[in-house]
Length: 257
Image (cartoon, rainbow, N blue to C red):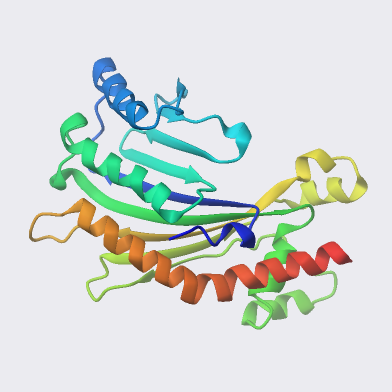
């Protein structure tokens, strides 16, 4: 399926995370062999580095705006593609990671705590992110009455909600909308003192998480396919019309004023 979401936001990300019960291997040869195998499939991923907390990352050059990345954290493996031309472009990378980790990182079905598939969007806006989020998502809710008070102003609107998507609660959906502004930052932006630092994005992410059942062997590839299908359906039916479009409408209106 083509990436139809790029026209709705400034940046779109399709990520996967594998959360493990045990710490991941830290041996030099194991880590380098894993990333070398990924680079063999995606030769343009040439930037490898270690972060201060001993997490490792292999990624493409980010300057083009479209790039891939893979991370090894203490107990989490991440895989992502920024602004993919199609969903399948990202899915192919994620499948490769799921295929490699059993024999290259010794992560088997017993070691997987949960598997996440995330669709994320950034919306560039210079100004109060909280006011945009409040107007777009809270206008007809009980929370809006708090903004009717004299001198009231939205300064802490970053909602996050988790819902069960299955009877056993092992399939869950999490929607979050994150503001990147603070009262001090907005004051600086409005006075013209911190304009450069105000160029941040409102972030929206929707994650479908799967916890393995207590019986049977967890098939991560099969679960991944099911999660992708479910995430696509919910994005199209719920997230875009009820979250994305209200945000983009309010941003567009505020830019005109």
